[in-house]
Amino acid sequence: MPELPEVETIKNILANSVTGKTIVSVDIFREKSVLNDRDYFCKALKGKTIEEIGRKGKFLLFYLSDDYVIFSHLRMEGKYYLYDEEKENSKYAKVVFHFSDNTKLCYDDSRSFGIMKLTTKEALSAEKEIKKLGFEPFEIENVDFLIKRNRNSKKPLKSTLLDQSQISGLGNIYSDEVLFLSKMHPLTESRCLSESDWWEIVNSSKKVLNEAIKAGGSTIHSYHPAEGIDGMFQTRLNVYGKKGDSCPVCGHELYYKKIGGRGTTWCPVCQRKKYPPYYIGLTGPLASGKSTAMDIFSKNGATTISCDEIVHKLYEDSNVTSKIAKIIGHDFEGGFSREKLREELLSNPKAEKKVDTYVHKLVREEVEKELANSKTRLTAVEVPLLFEAHFENLFDYIVCVAAPDKKRNEYLTKRTNGDARAFNELQALNKNPNEFYASRSDFVIENDGDISRLEKQIKNIVSKVGL
Image (tube, rainbow, N blue to C red; front, side, top):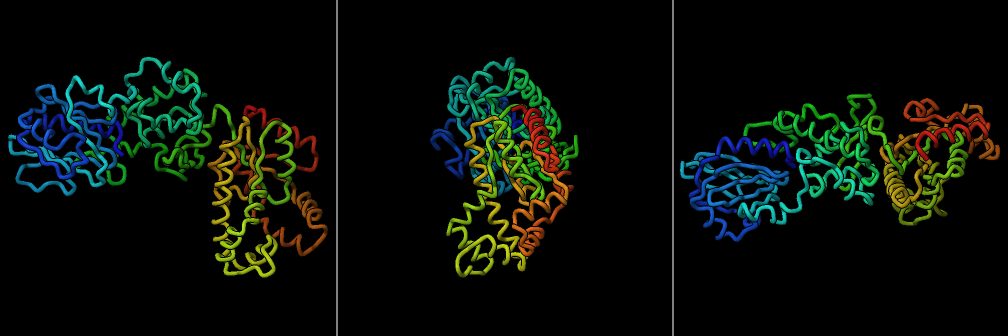
């Protein structure tokens, strides 16, 4: 969707190409594109001259003679093309303005989401579409209104930036870039921001938008500001559209998640959460002591969630086990059990991947639900397969529990009651060494069996993340 820089670019193009032109007639090919009565719109515009092209947020403003104004929102794919009269209309023309100099302006919209409306200069600010717009970053002289409005808002900061009634002009592309530049985590609750935080957001917005305007906006996917014209700011984007790439500042992998239905990309290192709630993902090799660590986190005031317990509940759901049986083509005679499933999957790697994909999706949904309902400042989630399941973007910090091989073997022997077959089956699940988890984590807990040392390490982590 074209945002402020793209609309500003279009405004400048139109100002140079249609200012001074007089409308002789109008064709409307899609009535819903125009919010006025069709006859009124066409008759009122006849003989009107375009005196100036303006912009308010993401709205284009056509100032006409006799104090008329057309405001136009391009939505996803709206564009304006100026042609000589004898040339065929653009492919997706919805409204065409014919001028007295034998040229025409086609409003082209392949998605048909854009709208326009004729009003007067006096009534413009009262139109509901314009009235609800907040200040543009360039217009903000103090941030008191943002602090007051968001005082009790738990809405993620990313969603607040997309709210045009708070700050107008930022869309998905530039809000990601603004958050990166201001070093703010997109899931930060808006109520937490201080005055200096809001000023950082406003000043970063001005910088990002000014640079984008100078570059002619961003040409993303199918959007071009005008025929044959590309914006170049997409070559300068730091994070938007770059999930999985390396952060241009620290080199860490960029995370991606949908926030409020909008795809969001950020750096988990450069954009650390400054305010609670904080979410910790606890992982590590099998039998490294994760459950013991979770108990200690709980004693230190954290809410704890176990993915193993979630999986256990899922396997008690007949709909889930029926789906798994269908995936692997096995009926589990005598009833479903994790042991039977493990045996089946050990000999069927392809089915194992499909089952993992299905179960991980269900587990993720449940974890997200429980995190949303958590009321504490810190929530720790035990996720044995955190990296394999790609759960990294759920957490603000990732903690690895590492234990020496000898100590893990002792735990496994105890867990399997000395059953060599069960021991070997569990060992087969230990596909990755300590280093695999440790190298990808923010904190590493060394578990050598000394509980007091384990408690000290966890208290230190709790203190560092701000509980």
